[in-house]
Image 1 (spheres, rainbow, N blue to C red):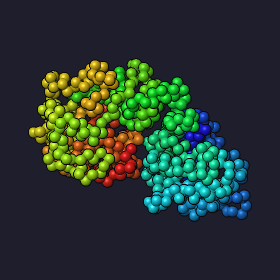
Image 2 (image 1 turned 90 degrees about the vertical axis):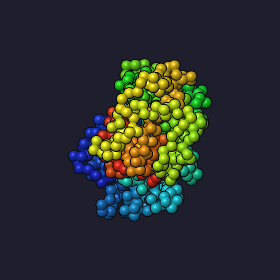
Image 3 (image 1 turned 45 degrees about the vertical axis):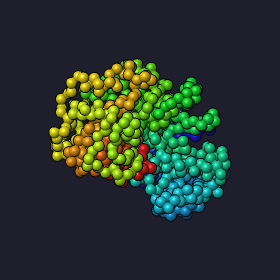
Image 4 (image 1 turned 60 degrees about the horizontal axis):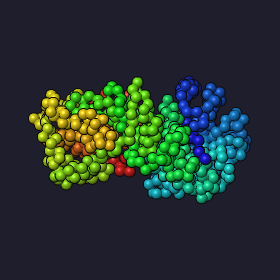
Length: 588
Ligand SMILES: O=C[C@H](O)COP(=O)(O)O
């Protein structure tokens, strides 16, 4: 059975009547998937329940944030389940950690409340979750199991229960659980239900996640197979709640529920049976999640191309290669999906479609963009003397990443390129710097700097061989050869070597980081990241709305107009980051 996605908005103790009206009108205007796809329930404070219920569009429902443990009576300040039913309020949130921790509600008390509310006909969002101390002591599952057990002991029919896993350390802190961490607990909770209630309850009960969910992180969380929705606090008061509701389109459903196959499908794709058969019949086809999209307009921006592809899944990266010398777009792009199956889905549906008035072709790219260690390996294989023992630091937080004072120059097959190392850089040097004020101080020109003018035509032809005529280039027809993986690898390498020669340590560079689909430039010191290869894919900290979060470095350089989506304008100022402090397991 397919569990319908559930998105709850917990407004907590916030809002005036004017603010509430504004939120409701935003919700009513939002274009969201139908009720067949997602169930939306907002939970204003008690006093606004009638107002919200009467003004909210009928697709959305309301929940109270609490109710008394039994029938009403002499319980000053309490609101009973019977009263909620009387007002036509269908849902109630119970056991929220703020009540468990601040008002000392015990597991048993919460269990009693859930049982009574259900008995009165209310549907219940029952919250469980561990504190930071409990997580750090390794007792996460013990804690959530005990909380769930107190409910299971009192409830036999789970039809009207949604279980909300809300790690306390993630609530209101901006520290969202990584999709993997959320999935892990959700999966364990489901197993617990299977063992301690019934397989049917385990299979049908929705387990939703809560804790710093926002418009940027919701898609990747929604794609986790055991995450059936969200309970959203802060972001439910903002327009981005609409985006969170829309993330229901990115959910993943394990297909064993459909066909007994070990295959995960996005909701959008299961609507297409022809694609399902196509997918099953191409299951063995090599697919790294990377698609090559041809015949896009030269003025296309990554965020524009991203939109139609995101309908099929979480897009990690959209990369529009440019001519090395002219900096001009080449008319094709690489769209990298997190999930190869979603990439296959997109390839199937997007190939031959019209995009910006042109018929695009979409093929599976043979290779993903190279990771640093792969690039180093490639250098060694090609006969390079290598980097003198410098270790790859992709994901690894090796201390050896510190700047080498003697930059290593690849040789062997790369020497051809190195001989042109002073040929024109494809882009303005100024683009590398962070701000006009710091530009000269941080990147003083050196005699080793590349000149600003173009090289001769011979060099251009040679250098762009991998792209000169993409239709003719690649034997496998996907236009994705070693060089195409990073058109400007050589330029980046030169640039990073230059930095070392120019003083290295203490200088700064700028990285474009992608955090779950949103982008931000961040600054790094060269003492912690030396080269493009070392920075690519590395987890980096981004600062948004005053809180730190993790992103992934996807670009080492500028071209702001071409690669930085408009969302960046909403983000906070970039901050200094230290790669050595980032956590490996949190790499997106
Ligand atoms: O009920 C909602 C949770 O407490 C999450 O709140 P938050 O999204 O502000 O972290």
